[in-house]
Amino acid sequence: MSQPNGNAVFSLRSMKIVPRNQAFLISCTSASRFAAEVGVLDVAEAAYRHASPFDDVFPYSGAAFEYPVGVGVGAAAAALGWLDLAEQHYANAFALCERAGAPTYLVATQVHWAELLVSRDAPGDAQRAREMAAAAHAAAAQLGLAYMSRRAERILTR
Image (tube, rainbow, N blue to C red; front, side):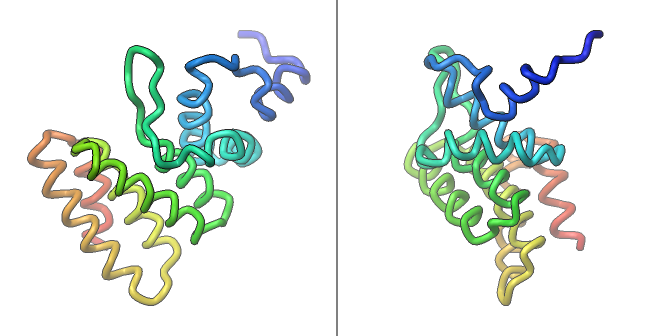
């Protein structure tokens, strides 16, 4: 497999490589979340800057919805150390999921938010994280979301 040239890497990191069409927001949201999870912080920040103004919507490709934008940009903000900002993004995503009646995405939002609270560890965060993880764990079990159930369980067994 060939390696990308320097221009291609720069383009990805500045999001110039992503077409400006109906898939742009979904691409930036996903890139925010994935780059944050693997620690590619310059990509996470570039994607964050494009997607964060839309943290209270579900990105839609024309064929499918993706995690709420607030989850993707919340993950990026957390990885970048902007913990209070990350919490606000998760709160916006949570409210969106509740309004939309989207239980699968609600569980994912709760798990990401609870993980943030554990890592931030401000006064009251541990208790809030446990409560959120317990609710997510119960809903994940009911919905058959094994991966989210395991992530919630890890929080509960700390």
